[in-house]
Image (cartoon, rainbow, N blue to C red; front, top):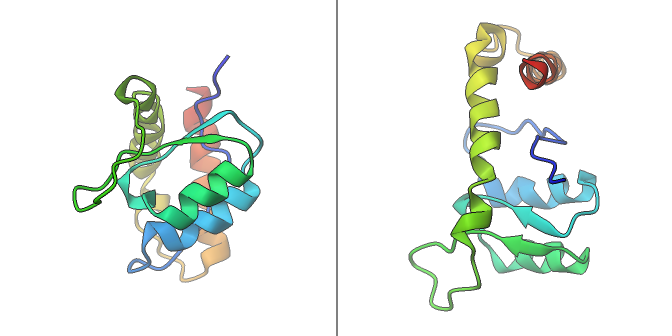
Length: 120
């Protein structure tokens, strides 16, 4: 059975690109056969890191990419579950607008919201 839930969270600044945080998230992710990600993670370095773990990356290529890697739109439909989870997290006002300046408190709020939304 495919597991379609977020397994790790990483808080970054608002201006940090996804692919910069992607390497840290991949270190925390469990073993899998296929890893789904959105276009923000489409870089050769992240693809190599995913393949080094023995998984196959299923990431839609950016439009400016010369070489278009293999991509399955059917498998990518699983990302919809993750996007819906982020939508549910944003419903929790505390995680959508961090009133406390502490990253640790914001991460705790996101983890609690994700746990609650996963069981709903």
